[in-house]
Length: 297
Image (cartoon, rainbow, N blue to C red):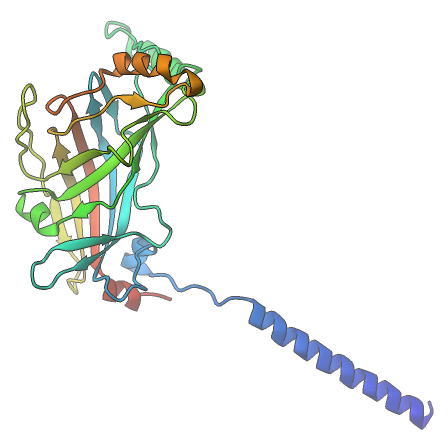
C-alpha cells in the first residue's frame, strides 16, 4: 500500500471515529433523564405534586366498599375508587388547599354497575343465590347494563383536623355522575360543572333533613411510621346523607327530551336533600412532601 493510500485510509478512520463519537453524544443528549419516583413506603405518592414548593402534604386514598344511594337507586361500591393529590397548609389557620396530582387524575373514573340496568329488574330474593347472581349478571352486563361513574368537576376540599376530630366536613367532593350505556349515549349526566352534586363527607355524625336520619362515619385505625412522616388510616368511613341530586341531562342524544324523563322516573330524580346517601369505606395514606422527595430514586 502506498504512503498516500495509507494517509487516506487513516484519515477515513479518524473521520469515522469522530462521526461515531458525535452521534453517540447526540443520542445520549436526546434521551431524557429517567424521572425520579418515590420509593418504599412512599411509592404510592408518585403522583403527588412535590415539584410545587408550596405543597406540604401528599395524600392517597382508596375506597373499595360502601355505596351511593341517589333517589330510588343504590349503587354498591365493589371496585376501588382512588383519590390522590397534595395540599398546601396555611400555617396560621391550619386550612388546607388542594393541589391536583401530576397526572391530573384526582378522582379515578371508576365505572360501577347500576343494579337492574336500564330495565330496573333485579332477581327475586326468593330465588337460589346462584340463580340470582346469574340473572343479575346478565342484566347488568348485557345490552341493558348501565354503569355510573363519579367524575370530579372542581377542586375538592380537605381537612385532616375535621377527619381526626370527627366534626365538620373532612372531604368536600363537587361531582357529576355519568351514566353509560349504548342507548344513553356519551353525554348522560346527573349534575354538571355549573350545578354539581356537592358531598360534604364526614367521619362524624350527619344532620340530614327528613326522611333521612343521622348516620355516623369513623376515623379508623391510625398508624404512624417510625419517623412520623407518614400516617396510614385503615378502615376509614366517610358519610354524607344531606345532599341533593338534580335531574339527568343529555341522555339519549337528540332524543334527550324523551329519554331524560324516563331516566329520572327510573332513578327517582331530581332527588331533594334527605333522600340521598354516600358511604365511602377504605384506606387513607398521608405523608409529608419532604419525606416523599427524600425517598425518590
